[in-house]
Image (cartoon, rainbow, N blue to C red; front, side):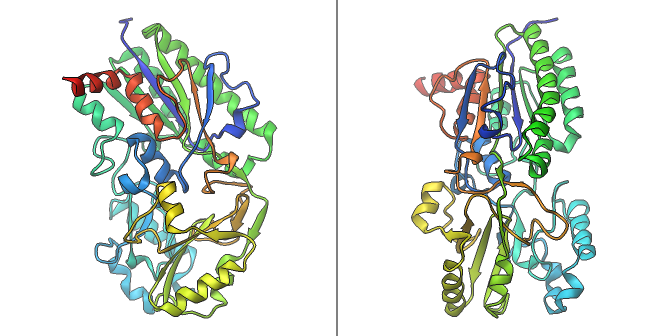
Length: 393
């Protein structure tokens, strides 16, 4: 086998620090172990952050849906605003829109209709292209853009290509038989498992044993290609046990304001995002939600501190965030029939929200936040040194 410099980064969706801090998950192989603060929100904001080293307000990706009526790909659904709610607010219509988005509009394999069909023509979808490749975050350079520019031979594995088992099989084959020097392996299935089982530590440990065996095998194979192998396991966020549910949509509906004439709302499991079209709606909603026990509004200063402030309000003029452990009883993302025991998307100060970094080598610079993973990946595949040399030259 030809020896070559090799770096492997494995991103396991939703595997948080609280889930692995007291277990022996790859502790013999990956001695450097620490939590990382995530961004407020979901993978749609967190993964672009770790791929670019920039916060959402810089790279532009936060939640999947944002207000953009002028350029909405769903403008053809505008006539639905006149259709009575029960005729369009159902599973069949949402499924038809989902299939149209995936197969006709080019929204990607994970597109879901998570906004009321009667409101969809007001919105756009941020992941119009896969973020797991060059050009995936328009206007901002990702690790993959840098690899392309520097001529680094790399491979990316994500849900677009198959199951976690299939991705790991491909990664094993490429370590053994290709000339790639940087592998980025994104394993997404742990997220769904933890949504349903995060409170059952024995089930979690049993599930992680399979991943541990697969990654240990991948690491051994990588060491045959490069005894100085750079190998790390990381994540985008953690998973918080759900302890309370609140009917926030019912609370707002009871105010008897007209949507979309007076306001629009999108409910994202752990937060509600509002846009206002008259002052009465703004004052009424704010006053009503302050009385709830489940959450609070985030002001502009806090949004800036969290890196999710957008002056144009595209992701919401108001963000009402639930306290850790609370869940919107019926949101646009978790409708009837889905009763998760775990959720993410809470304030980053929640310890269950912390992501992880497990690595063979200690980082060359302090790591505190998932955005620091970008520099760590650059250094792992030698690009950090090249960039520093280029700056000095």
